[in-house]
Length: 257
Image (cartoon, rainbow, N blue to C red):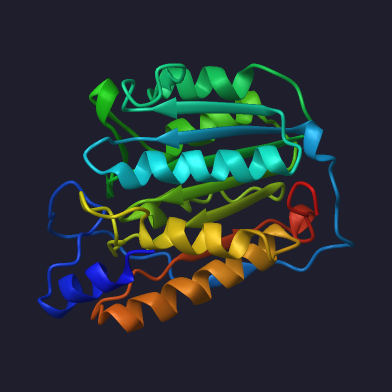
C-alpha cells in the first residue's frame, strides 16, 4: 500500500477524488445501509459464476490495477468465465474496450448461474466514465443490460466511482441483486490519482475479500475499512459507501467460500 504518500497528500488537502470534474447542485444522496432479511445462505459453485470487470478510465493506473487484482482473486477461487473490459488497450491488449455496448454484450454472452459486475472509474451524477468510448454508463443502461444478461439470477454489482450512489435507483434494487457503491450520490470517492495503486474503495474491497464468506459480509467489512482509511487520511467529507442487499441474496456466498 502507498499510505505514506497518501498521508502526505491528505495533509495538504489534495487527495485525488474519483470524479472527472467538480459539479454543482448534486441530487440528494441515497444514504444509509439497506440490508434485507432473507432465508439461509445460498452457495453457487465458483465455476458457475460469470464475472464482467470494467476499468472505465485510463488516466490513473488504479482502475486497471483494480480489475486485474480482482480477476486474479476470482480465478484463484475457481471462477472461469471472466470478461475484462478496459479503457487502456495498450495495457490489456486482449481485453475489449469498455463501452456500453460491449458491457451489454459481455453480460448477455455465456451461461452460468450468477453474475458479478465490477466497475471502477471516474464518475459524476450521470454515472461512470467510459473514456475509451467517449461516453458514460448510467444506471438505466446498466439496469437494462443486467435484465437482459442476468435476468433473475443472483447478481452482484460493484460500482467504484465518485457519486456512484446514483446507481441505487428503485429499478436497480431488485430482490436478486447485491449493489455496492463506493460513494453516496452526492459524495466523491478517493484514491484515483496518477500515483495511486488502487482507489480507496477498491483497496479495501481487495483487502477484505479473502476474509469474507458472503457478499453482505464483504460489503460491511469494505464499508468499515473505507471509513477507517478516510479518517486516517483526514478526509473531511467522507465518501459514505452504500450497500443494498436484495432479500433473495442476503446470504449469497462469495465464489469459492
